Image (cartoon, rainbow, N blue to C red):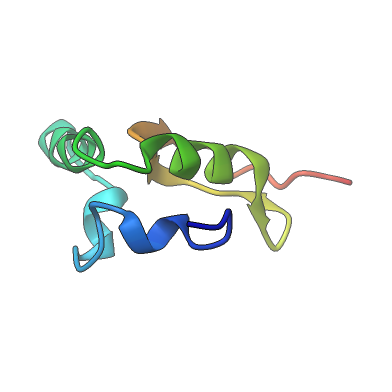
Length: 75
């Protein structure tokens, strides 16, 4: 597995992505439960922590952690 294809091994493959943008504590627990079974949880969390989308931090549940900020970063 290369560093660029870790997501192909993710436990969330095939899941509705809405689950990873929870609106309730129960939804957040459900998303994190999927992450807790994932063999690439560490890579996922690292990716979200070190990448942006159009200058904005990645949000939602990544690597079992809620990344809730939407403040644009400056570089």
